[in-house]
Length: 304
Image (tube, rainbow, N blue to C red):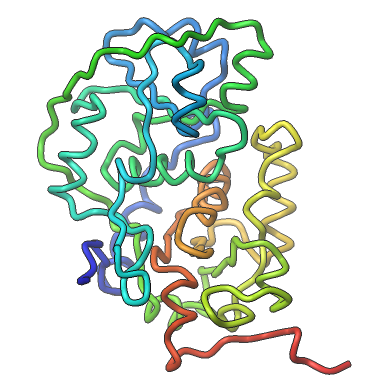
């Protein structure tokens, strides 16, 4: 299956990043919403609320007005798992249709939240919205539905009627890169390639996509270390230390990958809250690991 992704040549990515660096970057306050804020704005006419989680969970209870969304609603998946990729960004026309089907219009303000612990699927939705040009009009509910309920807000089982949005042609942001870009930028000044998988995959203890280890030169920052035990985003100070320990300097562009391009978006979302430009290797290790022309560093092979 041919790739539907918009993968931008290196030169264009560099130009886009230069332009982004000259403009104001979103802050943590822009990218997250509190339960109190959402409660005050729940009936706003332009609000689109998206619930990410298990369908049965959503049908049992969700925040009033929320629409259920899963990865199939915002991505393309190949049925040929030997050759195709499980999770890819759609082309702009397809993505426009998919977002409109969720009720999103040009003037929508979108809040994404997760039920239980579905943090990385939710940040994948957030990344997709940023790619689609809604980065300044979308926010993640910090702590998800559990935080919403913990603060005493109501939930419902009533499913809102479907409502199609009205969207102009998308002006997508060049946020997706390929293996060639990763390989050529892994040691480039101003860039830091991050492996967002669990340490057991990075260290080669467990196999990922048929090969053990990681992209040579990539640093490890497991996606689940960006949130606390209640699935709330860690403080700016804690995140700054995490990224510094992974070799990320102030102003660096964070390029992340994981297994299929989902967990990495939790790392990228955290990086965005600190003001870093971000890029996703959407093919991730599913693409890198199956290609024998690309090297893999496996720490477990090294002898003491």
